[in-house]
Length: 501
Image (cartoon, rainbow, N blue to C red; front, side, top):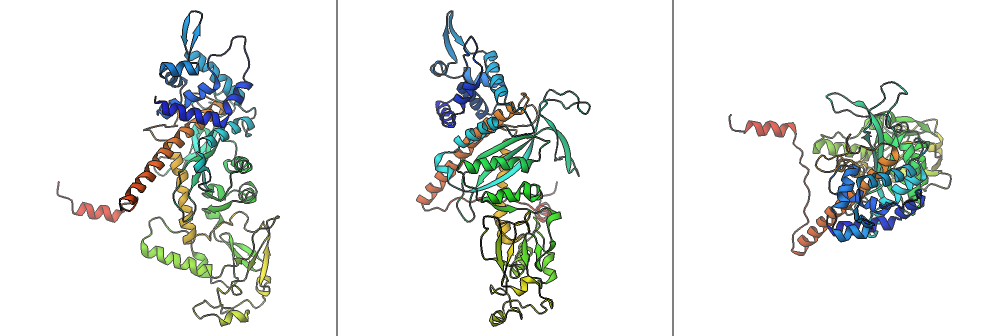
């Protein structure tokens, strides 16, 4: 193992400060332990960075494979009465079991402070100082992690991993939407670039491994709250409908209280009109004029295989719908209330009930049949919106507008974070990758795995940045990535011109 990797990982461990605190919590025996917590964490990082499985035998092999001077410095080789003694596997197993036992939460359904603090601080230390303030936007997602233990044969029966439980994941079979698995839910918060800004290194900054009995979005809120308390600002938070479909008190409202701007995909049950507020129509998280043409409410998210013509028509319809939206004229106050203004008052449409708007250009759409019994949103220039209106569906951009589609596209960073640790070519966290059981041991290993994953992402990002600078210095444009998507028409055309067999 190169000495540079050792120095990098040692710097991360020392910067996090977790090793010394754990060492103080471990029981003190009559005979001192040869393997310290700091060296154990270094061995785990070295083993996982080399693409090895999370087995303690691999950790032992990574430590004893170090050069002799490193082994003596780290206490892997020490002098005993009978001469030099090389670290044994039993000593690795002993120290790890003590650390995992100290960090294991007593209640697997609750986030343990010590366990989560270890994960937070070690991941935070893996993010270099020059990258910490590169972005305030994060993509969150959860995935499945199988336990090595077999599930109980009967309900409430014995299993070697009492912290694991049954959960749902997407099935791999044809026509199979979901399937059961026995293990944990793993959630990640990945750094993504701001809108209309340069790319950033997609580093995982927080993670949570929890039993499947817990609701993943609700369990992840305290992790994000602790991140904000630590001085990490939350800007855009991108998530799929698995998060947005939760009741507002469990996800959307706590995130807004932290100052986050949500960019979400709405669940089909949350799309469409959801009643009114003072006469204004609630649609996809926004408020619209009661005289909005009904045909505009038929718009849905753009299909993935849409061509350029369909995309332009969809965006034009979204822009037309935006003209009837009641626009914000204030931010949220301390209690979450804010005010919105009539689209005619804001000069977006022409309405006979707003005399000033009739002087607008005829290019603006005109309200031909305003409601006879004018609701409050038509009698007043502005109305107050309480936090419980569109609490679950309100987000940064109108759904499903072009601005929302482009902004939400950044969420693919969360998928890349999951795929990098489910790659058979490197660290594949499928069943058997880690044969240790319990949420404490699994969290320790997975946290160290994402520390090494962050270092690989940083190395690749810096290499691309260096290549772009080199190309610019020689007058060449930066390299761009083309999306290779072959349609059925492309395949048919290719086969038609193929030589005969």
